[in-house]
Image (cartoon, rainbow, N blue to C red; front, top):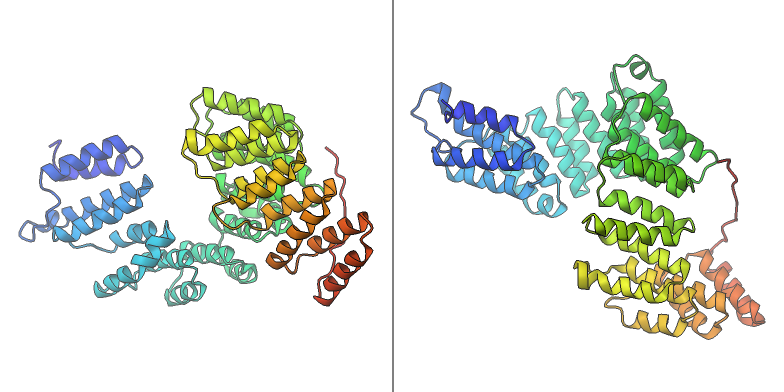
Length: 474
C-alpha cells in the first residue's frame, strides 16, 4: 500500500518544495515501473503513468529545475506515456524561464501540442501568452489571447504582464479598465509595469488606487509580497517630492497587513530607505530580519556606500564573510563604489583582484567602471587610462564617462579631450558630454574649442537638459 502508485502520487503532490523527498519518491516510482504506460490495465490505472509524470514535471518546475522538467518530458515520450492537457502548461512555464529554451524549443512544442489537438485548451493558451512574452513577441501574445473563447482572469493577467514588460502601458490600462473583476495579480502587474517603464509616480499612485478599491478595503483582495516589493522599488527610484513619505506609508501598510518580513520584502525596504538616505531605518530593518540572503546584505552595503558610510559598508562585507554568505557581482559593485568614494585605492584594487581569484566572479563592465572611477577620483589618471587599455572588451559610456569626469576635476585637458571625442562617438546625443567638454576647455581658457563644442551641439540638435533640485523632509 505504501508503494502503490496512488500513494506515491499523493507524496509527490505533497512534497513539491522538498528536493530530498521528491528524489526518494521518484526513485520508488522508477523502481516499481509505474512510469511505463500500459494500455491493457483497467481505465482507473491506465492514466496513472501520465499523472505521475505530470506530478514529477510540476515538482521539478517548482524547485526551479526547468531543464530537468523538460528532460522528464522526453522520458515520458520514450516510455510511451501519453501527455494530456495538464502536462503542457508546466512545460511551457519551464520554457518561459529562459529565453534560450523558449527560442530553441517553443515552436517545436507548439507543433506537438497542435498535433495532440490541445492547442485550444484555455490553460495551454494562457501559458503560450507568457511564452511569447519571453520571446519578445507582443503580436503573437495578443493573437493567442484573442483566440481564447472566454478569457479568464488568469489569461487577462498574463496579457497585462506582457504589456508591462513591453512598455505598452496604454494597452495595459485599457485592458485593466475592461476587466469585470481584478485580483491581486491584476493590480500588481500594473504597478510593476509602470515601475519597469520608469513611470514611478504612476506606479505609486496606482498602488494608492488599489488600496482605496472596494475589493481591498473589504478584504476580498489583499496586496501580496510582490505588490509591496514592486511599489517599494518605485519609491526607491522616484525623484519626486514625497517619495520617502510614500515609502513610510507603504511600510505602514505592510505592518497593517501583518506581512511577515520575508527576505525579499525586507530587502526592498532596506533598499528603499537606503536610496532615500534613511540609513538608521535601513539598518533597523536589517537587524529585525531573521533570515538574510546575499541580496539583503547587498542592499545595506550599497546603502552605506552611497551615503558616505564607506567603512560601515566594508565592515558589513567582513561580517558577511564571517557568516559564510558568498558575495556576488552586485556585492563587489557596492564595495568598489565604497572604495572609490573613500579613495581607498589599494583596497579597491585588492578587492577587484579577489573577485576572480577567491570567488570565481568574472568582472563585468560595471566593475571596470568602478575601478576607473576609483583611480580617477584619486587623481591617478594615467593609471586609469592604462587600465582601460587593458580591458578585455571595449569600454562603454560609463567607463569613459568616469575618466572624463576625473579629467575635468583635475584639469587634465589633453586626456579629457581624447576621452571626450570617444564618448561623443558612443553617445552623440548626450548633452552632458558636450557641456562637460566645453566647460573643461573654457576653464583653461581654450575659448575657441569650447565655442566649437557648443556650436557642434546646436548643429546636432542636442539640447541641454535643464537642472532642477528637490528638498523633502525626512
